[in-house]
Length: 232
Image (tube, rainbow, N blue to C red):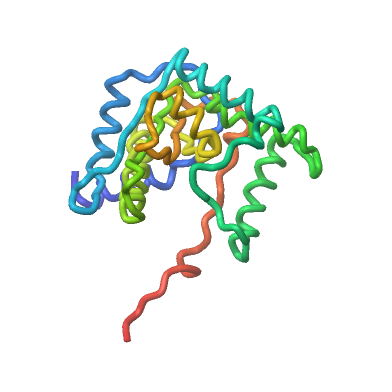
């Protein structure tokens, strides 16, 4: 296979990746999961320190964690006691980021028939995060708390590799930061201590094409809006 053909295949895999919000219960072979992670571990990291750690959850452990988080999420009094492990979004939104964020929410709610002001249904939709959208396998990621910002950049490349390697094998994925607000519950169930910091999780499985949310394909702005060739 020539270089051009390989490049075309890689491009196709990257372009086809999307966040899947509805999975079939079909199990993923452990060898496949390990192969994806091993492939992803070729990501670069500063001085090759490889700051990642992965917890693979299935079955009862996954379901018990889901139930524990949902119990808190569905109780406003309990929910108020939890704070995110880190700040994911900006404290003040500005354009064009505000419009992009609103659009993806509007598009998703339109697909599932949720109207403006239907807060209870919005809450139910958000709660699907904590069921992992029905995924049979979930990967939780931690980083040593002593690591600095550079290692988080490294981690992003590792996570992207997992998404692409899974897509190449016909699997759907959904990277989720929703659990960072409940990192204490996650740490308890995964049995890691305060030296580890929760980064995010990725739900993984075979896409259920009957789930309406999976029709959502988010837009990307033209590269001309953010690429600048500096020649002088």
